[in-house]
Length: 457
Ligand SMILES: *Cc1c(COP(=O)(O)O)cnc(C)c1O
Image 1 (cartoon, rainbow, N blue to C red):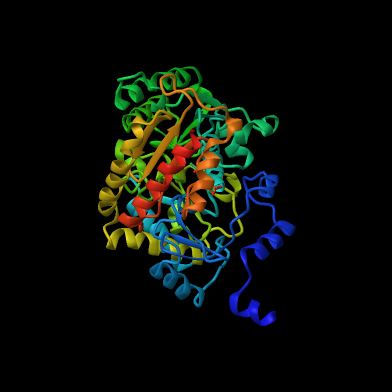
Image 2: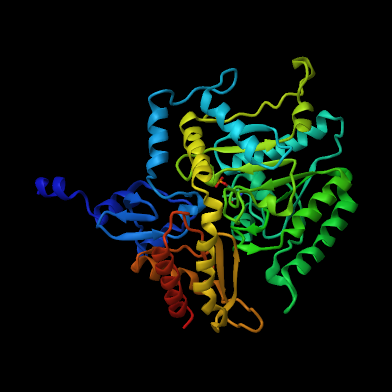
């Protein structure tokens, strides 16, 4: 018996029993797992995950949008291995190290012009909190103490900590904790799902700058910053809008003297077809938050890029108490920085942004047939993000009752057929690692199509 286990390793069943005994999983109703077994992954390679029974799953969601160049990527593996024998971690206050310096140089170089300072944290929510505090503190250092509020878009998402939940507007995550949260000003999003029939994305998104103008006009004196997710509201059901909104929003923030904070945590690193989504509106935000794809999906790390102007407002004699005294234990971890540097290097050496174009086109072509499906309200795409929104009634776009959990059926169908899809409610989406091949794209879209047919019967 012992021999058998040693040769073959534990089975999925054994792993799951141990798991449920001690683990509480994120974003999960644990009771679901009475009927819906967890999947314990033993190893992974490229776009594929493998469980303890040898079943394989194509990772169509990049393991929650973090993976960029596949699992156990040889180049990133090697970079982390090299770094680990050199320096695993060191305090970043009063001390520094080469990977943190080199990565900051790189990030300043590749992000929009004008972003010249890099502040590290260790996850996306923390980066948003950093930007939030920095913006508030900037105005305070300038003597503008009346500026204490923030504007964000409806259906937005910025993380799970109290500050970021307050900025977000996804009811499922936020409502329970509402009594604990600061009050933000919520402005209607340019999300083109709501455009009139026949109206162009550009037209609708342009029109939706008006509610922002009104809110800014009324509140600018007390507002520090506008937070937004450029081009795609990912956790908000992959809702999308036109780049014109970025340009108009930048103009408005300049006009009313408030910061513009771009949360590129999900959309950064090529997801929208450009390295950063802000490029498509030709804008430089006052703060840009990066995480998720930053390390290629290897290690937790985040960065807030900002301007010399913001930096200078904190730069003073210590006694004046203007310093930004914020820190996280693993800030700027060298292993994570090494993974990030190699990730950026792959973008450069392998011409990834160009190579993704035919892949994104293939996903669009293969998904096209769903446009006419009687229970598909919309098929939309921005770069390497494609979403298929299911509905009960195609004409009115009326949603299915959420209790029916139609998307969950697509998820289950996917797992039985070698594809990890993880719909957001009833929105099925593809956000694959860029190493995905044409054959794998075909498998991914075909399994999703079958799953959608089954789930909408
Ligand atoms: C995931 C996400 C965050 C939060 O990042 P975590 O690392 O999960 O804390 C913030 N903003 C956006 C747009 C995200 O998609």
